[in-house]
Amino acid sequence: MIIFKRHFKIYAVISLLIFILVLCILYKLPVKNSLSELKPNQLRIHYIDVGQGDAALIQINNKNLLIDSGPDKKAYLYLRKLGIKTLDYVIITHPHEDHIGGLNYIIKNINTKTYYLPNVISSSESFKNVLQSLRSKNFNVSTGKAGIKIDLDKNLSLLMLSPVNNLYTEINHYSIVLKLNFMETSFLFCGDSEIINEEEILSKGYNIDSDIIKIAHHGSNSSTSENFLNEVSPKVAVISVGKDNEYGHPHKETLLKLKNKNIQLFRTDLQGTIVLESDGYKILRRK
Ligand SMILES: [Zn+2]
Ligand SMILES: [Zn+2]
Image (cartoon, rainbow, N blue to C red; front, side, top):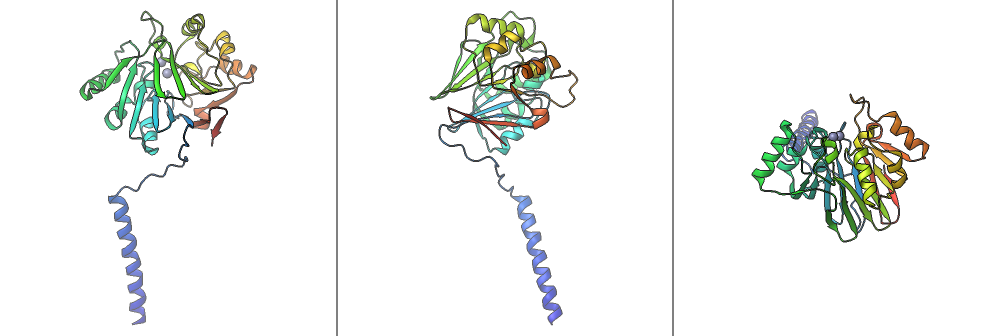
């Protein structure tokens, strides 16, 4: 009897464990977000590690804005892990695969209020697919260009500094460049803009002085001129780039410029996703 009782206990425990396992498989357990809840008027920026490409998420007061979608599903999976169901804005800086390739996952799965794209077309398959999906969903799609202001939150200003015209020969030159000011802190997002765009931005006289710069074009030597970097005078630079990419990004000339100016550097290929937070006065990095 004692033996039976002991076996019965073991069977009962095993049955219970199997039952729990089946429940876990049938009902997806809620994903725990390791990042704490944002406090009111706290800004959080995620430079998402998407490999070779760009995707940055801006969050404040329950609003979400995504700049670029990376080349594949990674950015979407990151948003899903954070539990994001709505994006107030998606800004695609330009229609190169490493910035727009993941957009279809976002269009299909995340409700987005407004899209911004620059006024340039690409012959790539993913660009055609994206346009088709956007049309079929009847989403609000606007043209991004210099001078456009994005109304994300009353404490925050977001201004497009580029592109200034429609006559460029390179798709990178159509990149939407964004300046974000949040009280006394500031961030610059450069897409894949190049030196020609930097000169235009400088000649327009915009205030580009920023605490943080997302370095243009994955650290390519065709961007980040000495003049531009002097004018931005950042404390910190972020390079979004894939390990061992075929372009040799980031180029050593860019790394040297940052080093010579004692600018602290974060790289997604070395450190993964970089998360920065601002209370309007100081900026901290979350580990
Ligand atoms: Zn790129
Ligand atoms: Zn590009």
